[in-house]
Amino acid sequence: MAAAPRLLVFTRTTDYRHDSIPAAVTAVRTLGPFEVDATEDPAAFERPLDDYAAVVFLSTSGEILTPAGRQHLASYVELGGGFVGVHAAACTEYDWPYYGDLLGARFDRHPAYQPGNALIEDRTHPATQHLPAVWQFTDEWYDFRASPRSSTHVLVSADESSYEGGRMGADHPLAWCHQKGAGRVFYTALGHASEAYEDPDFRAHLLGGITWAAGLDQLD
Image (cartoon, rainbow, N blue to C red; front, side, top):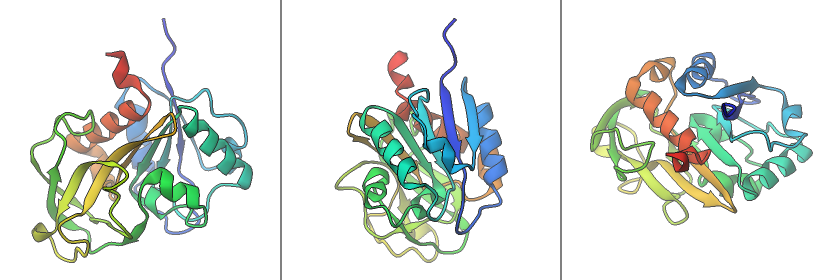
């Protein structure tokens, strides 16, 4: 029997810390047939990451990696490893230019936590194939410094007319994926509150993103 794919879930914060992190880690542990190593120790990145199907930055914030850790993560992805960023992962490693390219966009600001509509742009991707064309959700509706559309494949965008305070306009991606070297990268801006990790649609969204980034969708 093949061993379960392993995930490295990293939740270190040196800036804002989300109260939802424990619920988020629990959710990842129960999403699928994964062995999950969850840590806040940057030393986890100072050794090879080859044993992991994907690395998940789960509401990380601030500068969280050592220089050696940055080098190992970049090498891992470029050589075919999977990377998943969730919510505040976009508020991470501002001092490392490569990370901005890896993730696709950097966080700018957000309005109040409130209900709104997410528009599903790709109904075939594992992260979105289960969702309705208009997904009603409650979150912080992150604005980014620039749209990642030119360098990524956008899966979900925000309908700014459905909530108050959005500032990106008509092109407001919320979740996307792309190839980085030989690796796969998936990011979702959703996942602020603990309640999100109990929501079946969001859990399926997250599972689909992890599955895709890890290359497990190719095993079907």
